[in-house]
Image 1 (cartoon, rainbow, N blue to C red):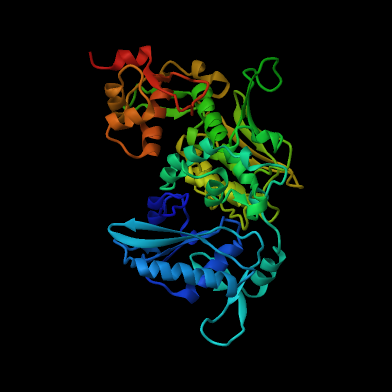
Image 2: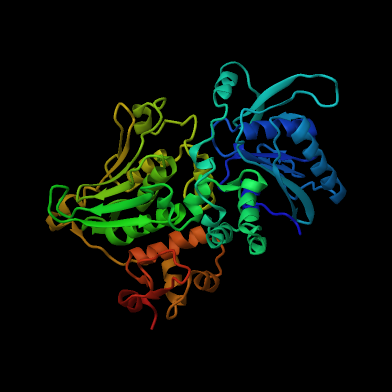
Length: 512
């Protein structure tokens, strides 16, 4: 049986959800260069989660050249044996990447998955094939593998034996605490070729292939990231792992409020919380002006900004702090609060301007899984995106706040002025706000094919669509926001039994 890795091969070959600095392509086998890159990825200087080496694929200007150059089967066998020897004799401490063979456009390629190591820093032999005893530390700088020197080398040495919290073993947990169903569901969702093989693997084998299990064979433990994503109740291990959404219709000083808690695997609660806010509290206004044909459209809060703010909190919060992520909604603003705040090296002025770049990430593995689920792009793109979409919606500028101790982080998204204090009812008669169910071409096609109750895959097949993210954003979510279709299980948006049906408004807009 051919070994597979928990990645989407298409993403790897087209830089989708994987930053280019975490992928290196090699047209052929160069053991010395590969050794140095393995050492660099294992050192994981920026806590990005290591990286991937793709052997048998040439590179041009940072992009893979397809069809691949390919490798012969006997080459792959020889390379895998040589990798074993290199991992024992040419890198210290010993390190062995996970490998898998894939066929791409009729050619065989070898993929090396090099997760951030648990016993860094690692050093490798500078030269192979001679009697030199020189060893050096290597790290990744942008898309290159370089020898660590000066300040970088001293900082790398300071990371000795420090593994990010999400990549550590959980010694009070057992392998049975990892749900094989959740692991297989994740692999299917990201389109991993390992999904087909997963059913035949036990928890330990599957967990090791996904790098959520570690330790010796006789004493294997789940990693924290595995319990966060693949246990139905991660709050049992990490108290306050939840997202609280609280709505104050009369403001924070009022007597009324609505509260909903989201608990469960991180990927699920992130999506469920955003979906709930979208369904329950987001409104679109269309203002028709008598002096021009174009209508003005805007949302009280743009969905993309909320999604980025919530995902940012899930990605960067500390799971050692017993405080939930809280989303507070009032008539004036939507606030996302998480603990702790950004690193002290990040100036709040730069953060507010969208210029801040984090030097090191708190949760390297959580970010890796969120990227695979298309929930984040990583690399400090979240804050600039929030600024950009708020501006595009015509909203006031968001604010990012933390205290001197950086004990917490607050993202404030002010409501669009057209909704502030329910101003929409007080606009002059010449500018009449009107929420209309205008249908985009995509939503129109969706309404035409939706018959009775249909699941997501049925709808995508009926529409001849393959890109799930495009379908979700431009068809499904838009139609739900406009009140044209609804979920059959609204309390569990991510349920595998979820189906969709037309609302009364939607039925009124379909062709007779």
